[in-house]
Length: 508
Image 1 (cartoon, helix red, strand yellow):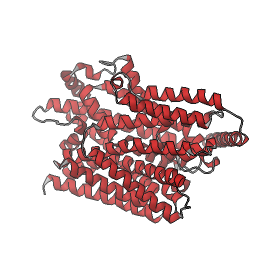
Image 2 (tube, rainbow, N blue to C red):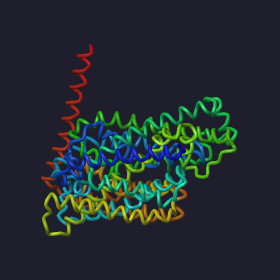
Image 3 (cartoon, helix red, strand yellow):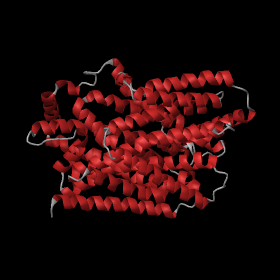
Image 4 (cartoon, rainbow, N blue to C red):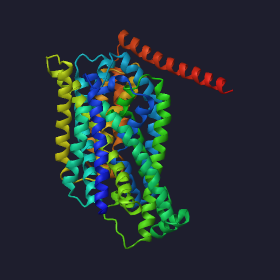
């Protein structure tokens, strides 16, 4: 049987499993709350793996290894910044957001939470938030489509457009029917697959290149500076790369997992599981790139035409075609898990945050779910059109969208959770300032000097604080909800501390 046939069989099995999970979720989805937030019933492990898988996308297995393969370890500052940012997000945002969204009119989306938190009767905050989500997520989803096309092009010598459409069709299908629950359950399976693949490939590769000695020797022959994490990078460039971590606080497709947890208490276990998963997969991705540099240096007869395909090429070189097919499915897992999560958030922005604002009709549960699915379809089609030109690298598309959300929503979410005196005008002015800076800075020569998330994030923070101080008036309802949310978070910390003490006594 030809090698490619084995790989195609593995791909079919994987895609069939994802569709099966989507169908299972479809049978458990009865209303819009289920479709958008899984009824707030996620266990910490599910929330953690889902957040990780939906976060990392094709960047983890394609973009990051490709960047390190080309430039060396100077590129790991992005990974360092992201790991620190993920830990901070789980520590400070997850428990408070879970508590506050339930207190504040049981909000099920980030825009609805901001509106309810700040008692915005004009609805402008929710509308502008929804528009920002749609604008930046279109680019983000497009990056996933590009990754899917690159995957099939590199793995099966397929046409880029055909591969992109296959990935888009399967992902749209299970997201269309399963909604948030379908995206979450498939994320868990995909997150585990990504973890296994990123452990196996570099370990086998290390053996292939002669252990650590052969690895370092071969890399030094290519470029001695590749093993130096500061070589060739200015202080500004390193800060710019590490600043990716600022983006975590404002990523709707990640923080919505916090809102869907069963209780704020689940954030402790979720943080431990999520950050552990992230550390293992990031180290695996970095190791894969280094193994790739050494392997292709030792095998000059082999060529790597696309650095972002180094993981794919190594998988096919090291394993039996069927096993390689399963490992290659991890790339699809990374791509599809992120696309599905982003499509659900876009759908919620269209239906919950925009349609319901302008329509005077009250939607039934069935109508809400149908419109949610139509929203998924619309955003996906636009993203496919953008990706069809393949004008940008995966990393550049992700970087722009990541900066947009981080700068527009990050400071706003943090202030909403931790500063009682944030006002609607302050939040709106800050959010718009952050988004505008990312759009203008990111599309100018300034982007070559500093990642656009840095000026966007801090301008949002400054503008929001200044405008809020100028417009703040005491509001007993806002203050009561704030205190209740804080009390709920503290209660969960006390319960967690008591449980830990009980466990120590039992162990002793």
